[in-house]
Each structure stands twice: as structure tokens, then as C-alpha cells.
Image (tube, rainbow, N blue to C red; front, side, top):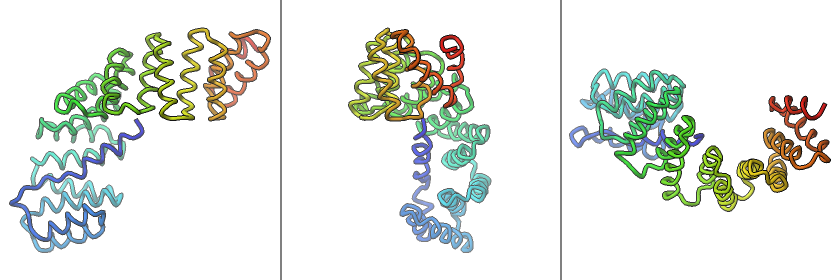
Length: 306
């Protein structure tokens, strides 16, 4: 989910403005914003305020967006607040302010603004998406599913909503539903190594190990050197009691990422299962995992290595 904020903030590029509000100064300010000249945009908006332009609410909204791009979040919030005081029916202002609160990790205020945006515009898939996302951050998973469903009803091919809903399904241990969402997402991005990895991990959770290995193979095909895929394939092979192949996959995982603590732990378990004659090597892996901070390894060290 690390890419989500970048996707979410794309909503800020939309403008809610009808033809009657157009004036040349505003058009120039908006053009400055669109071309990344955010300081110039602020300056032009200031001129609009000084001219007592009739479209002042839109200047506040636009300047707030420019301040957001300039990382001046306090001023940004002030401008969005001013815009709402002047016109509390603009859904995009609530959505944009919610995005700022989300960035500032104030999830309660973000949720409140996204709810207001949805109430004002019940046909906007992005607003439901944002509301679902903040519910996920607040660990309100049933609410998150509800709003992702609403978003996908309006935009069935929303890739990010499918992937995010699959994640929530996994958290709720509804792995079959998660797999269905991953399947839909893969139709949209059939070369995504991350999707194959995630689908494979869901398959492990329902003990479909052979199918999961096929997913990890595809992940490695599309992203060579993908240590998470090698680790996960090794884990699946460990569950299938194919200890030799599991060790080989885990060898590759730690060769690519030498500080991959859980891979050392899992390789240690595989070596213990493989042959008591290599117990010393297994214990070395368990101790390495422990040194790297994987606490569960100490239980195995105490049981098998002391």
C-alpha cells in the first residue's frame, strides 16, 4: 500500500468551476497551478483577493491547493476553511481538505471531510475510495469494505480499489474474496509482480501451495531478483515438505537481501526438517535471525540448539 498516497493526491488536480466563474486573472492563476508554478499561482490569487473579485471562494480553493503543493499545510487548511465558510456545498473542497488531514495523520478529521464530500456528491468514485482508505488506516475494516464496494460500483475497473479491497479481505481472513479481487486486478495489469506475489500469499493462507508456487514463479519472471517472491516460494515449499527446494529458494532470498531476518529463520526451520546432520547450519540461521531481531527464533534455538 505504499503507493496509495501518490494516487490519492492525484484527486487534487481536478477543479470544480463552472463557466460563469471564469475571469482572466483566475484563468492565469489556474494555468500557473497546472504548469507547476505554485508560488506564481499564490501571487495571482492574492491579486484576485485585492481586486475584490466576485469569485473569491474559488481563489481560496485554488490558493489552498497551491499551498498544499508548497508543503504549507497550515495555510492550506486555512484557505480550504475560508472556502467552506463562503460556500459549504463544494464537495471537492471537503475532499481536498480531507487529503491534507490524511497526510497529517489526523484520520478522524480526514474521515469527517470525506464523508461530507460523499454526501454532497454520491456519484464520485474517488471520494468513496478516499473514505475507504482512511477507514482502513483507522482499522475500521467493515466500513472500508463498504466504501470500496461503493467506489467499485461506480468504477468497476478501479485498479487501486480492487487491490486495496483485496488487502482488507486478507486482513479479515477472507482469502477467497481477496483472490477474486486480485484476479480482477490482474486483468488490468497482467504483468504486475506485486499482484502475483500477493495472490500467491493468499493462496498459501488457504493451503493451496502448488498454485501459490505458480504465482511466485510469475512474480519472479516479471521482477527478477524479487527476494519476497523467493522467500514466499521457499515458505510454500516448506509447507509441502520439499525441504531441499525450500532451502535453495531461501538461499537466494538472503543472497539478494542479507538482512532478511525471517528468511534466515525459515531457512533454519527447513534445514532442521531436512536433516539432523546439518543442525549446526540450521542453528546458525536461527541465531542470525535472532540477531537481526526476529524474536520467535529464540524459542527454536532453545528447543533445538542448546
